[in-house]
Length: 165
Image (cartoon, rainbow, N blue to C red; front, side):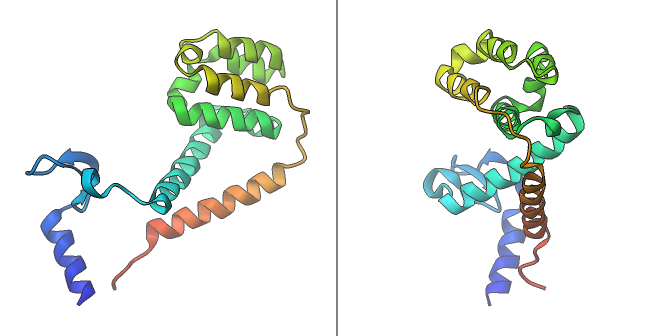
């Protein structure tokens, strides 16, 4: 019975991976998920965040060739910035990235503050800039890779799950 309901709803509703307004004017996504009345759960939000993090890490691996050799606190700053600004937005911080590549963390901090981004989200920029003050240790790279592989494996599993055969 649930399989029949599921399949009928898939067919009736259709799939939209972008938000749209349904005939009653409600913001909707997926297979007719009314976001205005139903929203999403904390678990759903956390799953979306995990998917976004995995995608960002893959993009950073391709676009910022030196980021994985940076200490963990620097990788966190790069990943946080990429999440908020998008990888394209992060790449616009050319002087910041050049400073990181040269391990000039003071200049990188200066470049963070010398931006429209710092004016828009000053508390976030201040907190992230403090990450560049931490002692630099790079001995976590294996754990980082292990964590990433675990999250990537989970997201790939979720993307390939079939509810009804």
